[in-house]
Length: 217
Image (cartoon, rainbow, N blue to C red):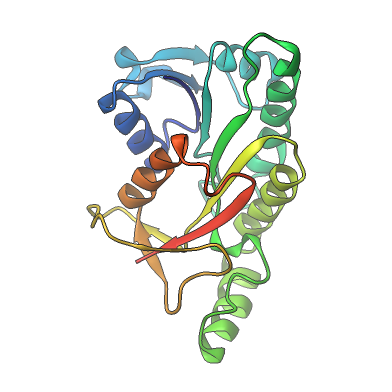
């Protein structure tokens, strides 16, 4: 299968790329700094930015599925998702009349993207996470995730948004909880490796098409 990956050089994106390659898929990755990407010799590299429509179009050429692990790299206001996701959606829509339209997209989101994400948490935890974490500490990254949700969920694509809580760099456990309504009770973290595995599983899984899905340990 031909897979286009955006955000391939990030911590989760690198794991996604590794898994795609290990599964025998062909990967096209859009990279701003290809020379820094450890897997550059194993993928078809497109040198450019997800903010540039021409680069996004080139990345989508021949793709069966799109994976995005784009996101903020700091707590500052970066607007990565606000700028990149509309470009990706627009470029995918342009393929609708092609012999092989690109409709499937699986994006890495965040549990903070929706106001109902904490509905299954104890009241004290809801207050702390919403008021101290989401509204203060992670104010700008959460705003970007809200923007991504609004853009992707209102598109006519076959989208899935995977929404974890805090990501860790630890090893995959291979077991986790998923929920289509809210973050599982007391779910507070999960490894990037487990999230990457789950995102890969969605390539051929219709269960979460046009839906968001929460995932945590």
